Length: 162
Figure 1 (cartoon, rainbow, N blue to C red):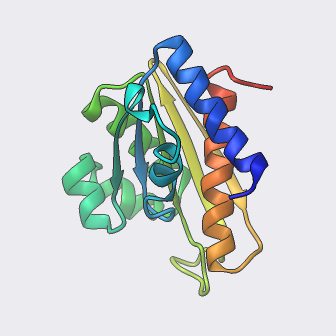
Figure 2: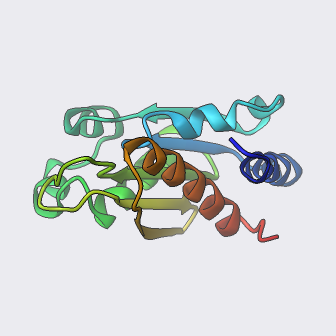
């Protein structure tokens, strides 16, 4: 992580601690990297409650409670699944916010969806917002970029625009 990336994580820490907010994560394509970022700095236990890595479709259904119909209808790499993952994580872990990621980091096309297509979503009480990302790097750089863009999206949506 570079200094700018650490700065984004630091601002999430400050915002969530200052406002007394709590956070849950539901990660698929980022594989726990956002959870790693959230716990890099001391004090994260004040706001970060849990991170679930639901990489397989089965774990999305069994751990988060996603309906299999949502995945069958939209595909796992979809806006609908990202939103549902965030909503279910926030409800399950009972937090103020939840952030989710799902996508194709590469190297091949999956579900007919190109490499670098990622969906991120932020759920808060009464509102879920999602965003589509189109990343162009290799698998590792796509993973890192998806994680950092998701953290920035969370920061923006939680009121920490700087």
